[in-house]
Image (cartoon, rainbow, N blue to C red; front, side, top):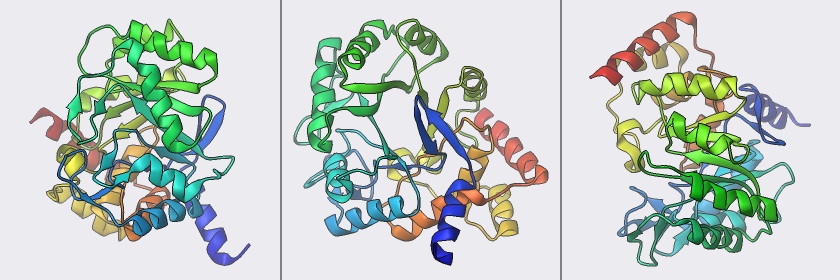
Length: 308
């Protein structure tokens, strides 16, 4: 093992691991939403990213030890699809690679949003992911929802696909605590994906703890972008975040990721980027250790920003 390889292995393992069902993943993963385009994601007029660059980023992620990729069939721009880029870059897939996808939302070929899938339409969405990824089964499928209505029929439909062998594990995205209770009465849940970060939905703190008590991974999205959402980070980090970053010789984005990971051992991170340098910086954030004083500053911002 070369010194560079050893350093890479040490970096990716510094944040530890967690299990998604029977699959063990490093706590720093990769989110594919930003991969198909440059600039804002999930808009019809997005500018396609250079294909070679996207493939390079994915292969570099795996080289850095990333073994958890979050994607969806509706992550696409004109000419580019996240799933197809993943297939091209990484197939045949490494045995330890866990690919998590989402169903529920959908977009037509022009990129316009469709109504969320009904229970009987979810199999088609699962099969779409299978075709694009070139797989016979999906490691993790998250049911993404909007609103507080019952998910029993939709989650039950996915549980049937799990029984049929098309899906290995199930998760939830953009849900409330009562949705988790409802889902667990139907089938095991390995992860919950909700929007969360410094100052972003601090009311999720209690739900995060509940997931930990049940051995369920909590996977924040937009932990760097925050209110910028699919457009990316808005660049208005507070003085407190910048101060902590300077003290560690790190970026504000790395501090945000490190804070997220230090919330609890069952919290995973799935930052996304189309830039190899940003990718390496995100992975390195797993080794950043915030002090008690750092955490006091950031926790205070989390509570204050969330209340504003």
